[in-house]
Length: 448
Image 1 (cartoon, rainbow, N blue to C red):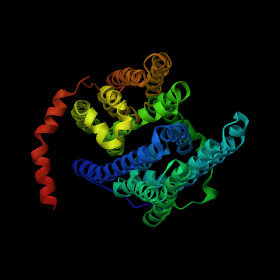
Image 2: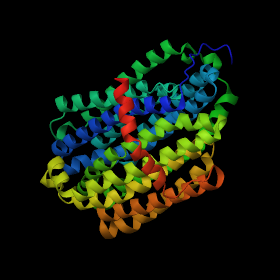
Image 3: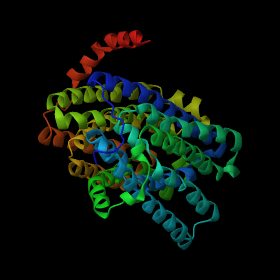
Image 4: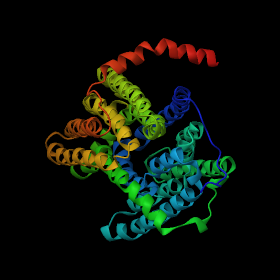
């Protein structure tokens, strides 16, 4: 649809990556810090059992969010980066699919949980938590990702966590306030979603919804493109959520809460990998279609940065695990210090896996990503079921390391075989990035 009123955005590859990285860096850093502060506060006011119950529900919510947003932030952004004129029909059909899925999920929650005989608090904790699905269904951050307007993506990352943290600090003071926690989270997400919708409609009039643009064939096409990514994301979520569910069921709410506290640090350190993925996804997609040499160059920088971030930060945290836990969570959470140190061993594999997964998506190799994710997820499930009864939280951490290693190894194999040759351990690229730090700082200083 060439007559669409879509604003074009063009930048040089270097400037685009630097600008995107800077905005996303600020947004993701703020997001992870704010979320971590919120969880740390909740560890103290809810106790490990209360935090364990909240984390159990949140593990299911994350699966629901993946299905509801259906990875259109990847497919939609990639399509917009390649063909800006497709935005009008993309926007309407993506929102239509998401709203249908959202309604189905809420119906399942409302009808199935009573059949399982859950207590009232757990029922309402699920219902209030799954309100977040609606915000994700109508979220338009994928539009800004496609046009590399990462300042708006940064807003989506940070603003909901600001509202959530402020609300929790003001209104959650003990175990009895547990049900307020998911409602306050939804409030921040709903507010930010509305802000982004207004911004998208003003900047890109083609993003305004027109349900006359709904077409069954377009819906089918979008679902076919996104389905392998959704499957892969659900499988990857096994790495981040299945262990909490198994711990909750086998070892109790308190141990699940202890493990979730340690995992707060893991997710904080993972922000670098999410930042790299979001920054390089549109860049690699564009270069794979037009400039294969540029694709290889950017992929080298991506994997080098992943190696640096995935090894240096986790090593520092592993060394200081005991004082970190005592300062952040208090003496009640002392057993989670050893688990935190073990979990750091998973981060190098997680970082490299995300980097190679980004390359597979940009090259249209979603099915291979799905295979690698399935292998890692299966390893994680078996590992948790075998090791948690024997070793508890430590068993879950060991299972995470092995699962991430399996997934990352397969992703590297598929990239090397089907996309372009890449080193298994990109030491040269990492060294090049370190040597380029003074030049980067000079550029940033000159920009000011």
